[in-house]
Image (cartoon, rainbow, N blue to C red):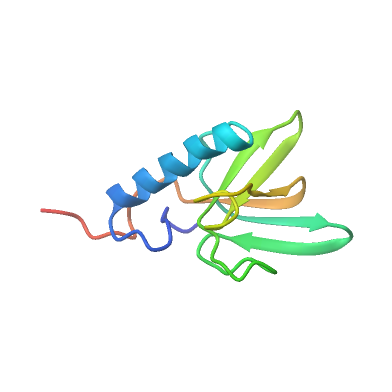
Length: 116
């Protein structure tokens, strides 16, 4: 399991702030996310398999995945956020037929230098 991070965030504080702001935005424009911090989802859409991973370019979007959130409607549904799809504006990419979910390591902030 990788340590929690947000692409382009230089500190743990900035990563937490971005994550919180995207979460609030999704609650307004889509669904209220759970607290689960997700690194990657493997899903199927229209008979094709996809993998979305935080920090990697999303297939067909040409943008990096900023965050992935879990919600229920009533079944599990995953909101994949790129800058133009749920992170800054627009609606997130929705994945419902998910085969695998990989969470971030619950040990926080190991990717960031500690401040003295």
